Image (cartoon, rainbow, N blue to C red):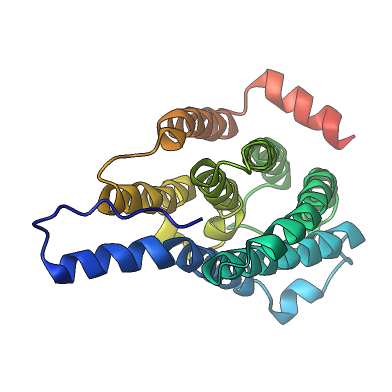
Length: 261
């Protein structure tokens, strides 16, 4: 499961050690980074005012629990690879497929339920007023933004099952798992302080993915084909989603309203 380090014979010993360190610890470090991003992004909203007002749909808490289990699962799987316990890694991986499938279903339900909840209740609640924005305009923003959640879930699902399909090809498997995990970071980045994110949270998602590209260049001196194939699709899709959310075209607003109803 360990990638051979393609170090040049004349590379200084210190550089070879750095390459070996990156090769050994990169994916484990990325699981910790992803967990930190999620904890900071969502942790900022765990405050008393979010527990007041109308009670949230139960599915939101189910989704939160599954998401927490997923992050713990990623850390455990990466740690098992580092200690070369491949047998347990593969056995636990099958449990991860059930967890991922549950996250997909619950994620879609949560997106719909929370959009409906926000449109019906939060617009009229004074604690959630956004700078005097009219409730009708805010409702349209919530409906249009539903596309972001559905896109993230679709990308995560597709990338995860591709990783399962190529589970016997470790170099493809680990990169697909990294990409799938990065697509789950968009909601966390969207909750970062706005002067820091400025609404362009997909740039930060892509920045985390580019760390994987940088790892390939450091360790193997070339970028893996997974990134060549997946990154253009993800970036084009992100731009389409962001443009559609901002433009609020009639065709999408009708679809979003139908889904919510």
